[in-house]
Image (cartoon, rainbow, N blue to C red; front, side, top):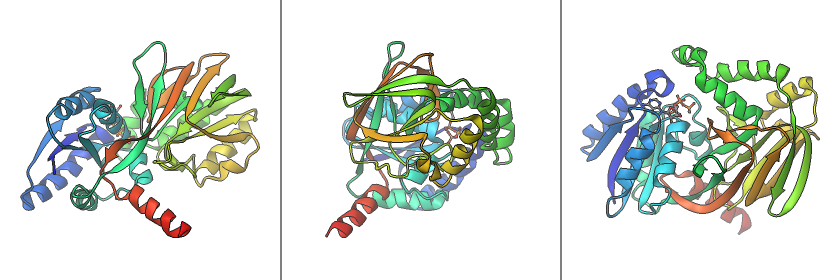
Amino acid sequence: MGKLYFIINPNAKNGYSLKVWAKVEKELEKQKITYEAFLTAYKGNGAEIAMLLAKQEGEVSITVVGGDGTLNEVVNGVISFPNVKVGFIPAGSGNDFARGFQIPRDPLHALSVLLRERKQEPSLTDVGKISCSSKEDLYFINNMGAGLDGLISKLANQSKMKKWLNKFSLGGLVYVYLLIKEILIFKPTDVQLIVDDILYDFPATWFVTVANQPFYGGGMQIAPKAKTDDGLLNIIIVYRLSRLKMLSVFVSVFWGGHVAFKEVKMLTGREIQIYSSTPMMAHADGDYFAETPLQIQACQQVLPIITRGIKKDRRQKELKNA
Ligand SMILES: Nc1ncnc2c1ncn2[C@@H]1O[C@H](COP(=O)(O)OP(=O)(O)OP(=O)(O)O)[C@@H](O)[C@H]1O
């Protein structure tokens, strides 16, 4: 069993992460568990710390205390090191990873699952790899999106209102506000997708989301059928619909009802190319990344993670098929 490392984003959810970490640290000391902790100092530092830790010989466990953005950094830092297992204690404002991988929201409960599960074989999760001409490849563990959601990620991350609302645990409202505002002015564009060598044309497209797990944007079920270890990415395309209907699609995403709209197309695939008539902004795990054109590839079961979620899902499937 490798040494336990923690990477904490002290700014996640406006410093709420430090309260979470204080609870976790107290419990680790109570249980006399050896660990080492690092606070990130700036954006991108989580990936650097994770990569340095990963370069050690033997098995290493790195647990993120923060939000999905810091987790994304750590995933990118360790992706080429199979000796690293990644854990997560949710302390951010969105926490979609925790939802999708069944990690408890309560810090001490999440820690007890982590301490138990790290003694077991890790679960292997798929991740997506995004390539484009202007930047290095970037991996995502939850989802990526191009179009309206990419634009909103960019605006939300720059927003002063999000910081202020986070003080009252209401940071998520910024996304709702930006979404309603942008729905009124956003200009949809024509999109061509190539999914596993098949070409699809989507006129007047609002967004294309590529998901590895069901949850997105702080609890919306964008891809209700997504599985994290099937080697497939779930693609959701929302196109050719009025601004008013776009609003109803958005509301219905909270319970996964958007799949019933004829303007919402669901596909699955391993290799996806996104082209658009005008460039679409894209995010990876909620952080703005680049613009279209983009290539996305599913990487099957490449990342060991410490969670009970995938194994529980698989056991249920095996029981159903027995
Ligand atoms: N010390 C730091 N200073 C500034 N930015 C940081 C730091 N550490 C991490 N980041 C970046 O801050 C962004 C947000 O972090 P994180 O996701 O952990 O918290 P959050 O926004 O509160 O939660 P969520 O992503 O779940 O909404 C990420 O893009 C991450 O890369």
